[in-house]
Amino acid sequence: MREAKVGNYRWVVVSLLFFATTINYLDRQVIGLLKPVLEVEFKWTEADYSYIVMAFATAYAGGLLLFGGFIDKIGTKLGYTISLIVWSIAAMLHAIVKTTFGFGVVRAALGIGESGNFPAAIKVVAEWFPKKERALATGIFNSGANIGAVVAPIMVPWILGIYGWQMAFIITGAIGFIWLIFWWLFYEIPSKHKKVTPEEFEYIHSDADASAVTEGENKIKWIQLFGIRQTWTFVIGKFLTDPIWWFFLFWLPSYFSSTFNLDLKKPSLPLILVYTATSIGSIGGGYLSSYLIKKGWPVFKARKTAMFIFALCVLPIISAKYATNVWQAVALISLAAAAHQAWSANIFTTASDMFPKRALSSVVGIGGMAGSVGGILFPLLVGNILDYYKKGGHLIIGYNIIFVICGCAYLLAWFIMHLLSPKMKPVNL
Image 1 (cartoon, one colour):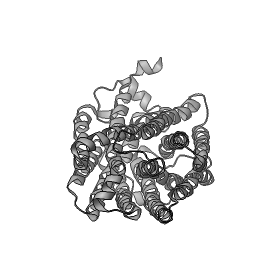
Image 2 (tube, one colour):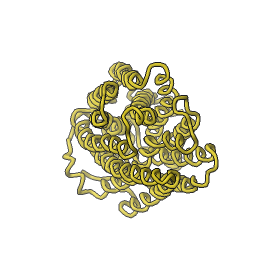
Image 3 (tube, helix red, strand yellow):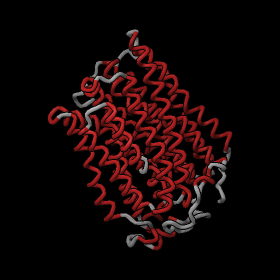
Image 4 (cartoon, helix red, strand yellow):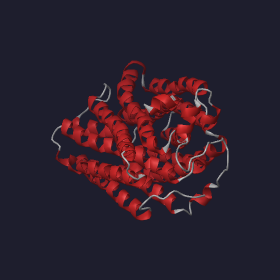
């Protein structure tokens, strides 16, 4: 009843973040679905493709560091706008590329632009939500990553079959500009927004340490953040687990195609099911820790308990090597991918639990950069493993090795995070 009285415009804001993240991942996912076509067109090896993925990851890593501090300085509204314009233009430029090197260049540009999404979105959630609702809000907008990945296997093959691969990049890239119109019409920070009631404003800032946010207020130098233990807690968690999601995005279409002869020129039900499951994981994962907090659990205990459960849920993917048909593989991978997104909804929220809002985009940027560094190294390992076993005609063995790595990464991350910050004490800057 209380939420109805205080107003609910903050959930309108979450819907904007959800659609932005959907578009972000739609644009990111296109190349993975077009990989078999582009391999023939440009004569790519698995290593060539891994270098292109690495170009994106490298630029994404640098961009996260850049955009994190940039958004803390100029604010979420303008920062998000600049990020989306850059990534949408870069996505469309894929259509005019003529060489493998050219793909590396435009993927790097896409990485720089897309890197602004999460630092901006996490800061928006911290600006608009008290701690007890942040994981749920993060889970909802983060599920856009999965919806984008669900839409892509339906939309991209359809465009490919009718108009060719170039138009797949142009059409998906142009969608971002539609979202931008709604962003400028409906978004502002709470202290400036006319739709926010005094009761909702008070509820948003109801945490004991909360205060109203003013754009650009009390800037923090991001270099200071590297000397804080809680920063490294977030950094290690992202470094060890983000690359697994990148593998799910960029190699799953190829895995199903090579292992189970999936035709990627048609809408892909296995991929749709995998990414639909991740949407459930993202929202459910955010709900679980938020529910525990509302039940009276300490914030750190609720987050860590939820994340430990999700880390355990990834382990069964190790048994994917025993899958004898595509649907067994879909079930195992769906569970792991859903658990990743549940983990992701909570690890993002740990940053807002530990750091004040004025430093949050910078911290998320640093952690995101660490995840992207992992995303640079892991594709290199994946590409070389798959090329090695492909030459011997045993590609499935290569995928099995990678699934073992995926299954163990989250428990390792959880234990290291727990050692670094057992109670996730808030940072006093």
